[in-house]
Structures are given as structure tokens and as C-alpha cells.
Image (cartoon, rainbow, N blue to C red):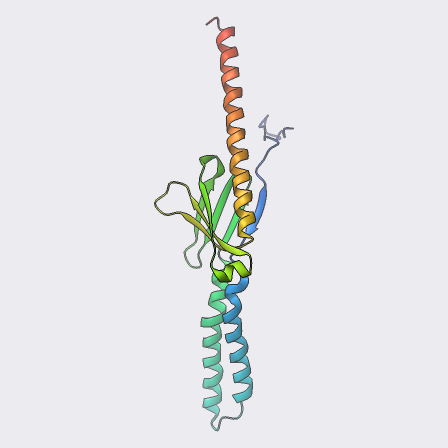
Length: 185
């Protein structure tokens, strides 16, 4: 199946890239920031109005806002800005708050996938997925849920990509052989 555009006969292959999974680190990292948030709201609600001076109540609110921003909002924003997307062709690593970084790794390149789990990650069925593609440092999907399933999917996608590349090379060599016969070589 091909798709033609209005400007000519540009063909798009039917096996276009599809998103297999969109991942973030496990939300467990937001537990302690949320405890701080609830504690700050509770303490501020309890103490506000009971302090003798007006400026002390204002300082309490300002201090509470600063603590909430530093210990809840920044960890939340950091967690939201770290994403991993697995497609049928590649893995895309996106991270960063003020400086955005995007890395891509093609499945056709071939790589080694390892899962590393701490005892806490094992309890929540998450883990670190290390992808060694021959780079200086392995790329790491940090604390992803269902790490074993992610490893299995990456192995399957890499195998399918290698099979697809092998079949394309075989087709290209067959076309090359037919061209040589037609040209009288």
C-alpha cells in the first residue's frame, strides 16, 4: 500500500514507523515530594493565623511556597520532562528542563539490553533498562515500569529490524542480478 501526494508520485511505504510504547520513570519517585507537599500544607494551615505578628504569617506563607516549589514542583517537572518513546524503528530518549536533550537509537544498529533492579524496584516490577550500543556509556531507561516486558519488546523489535534489513538486502541483490542480466553482463 502506498500513498501518493498531490505534488507528484512520492510514495510512503505501508510499514511506516509506529509508536510501540511511551514510557516515563516510575511515579514512585514522587512519593516523598508529595509527603512534603501534604506536610507543608498541613503545617501552614495549622500555624497560619496563630502567629502573633502579621509579618510572621506572611513569612510562613512565603516559606511554604518556597518549600513547595523546591521540593514538590521541581521534582514533578523533572519527572514530567523525562520521556522514552519506543517505536518500530528506534528508541527516543528525551530529557531536560532548561536544556532539552534528545537521543535516538535505531533498532537496526543492534545493541545489548540488560535489566538491573534494586529490591524496591523488584517490589513494583520496575527497573533500569541498560542499552549498550557500543557507545562509551550505555543508554539507560531509568526506573521504567515493567522493565522485563520492555526488555522483551526491545529484543523483538531489534530482531524484526534485523530480519527486515536482511530481506531488503536480499531483494536488492536479486534486483542487481536482474539488472546485470538485462544489460548483457
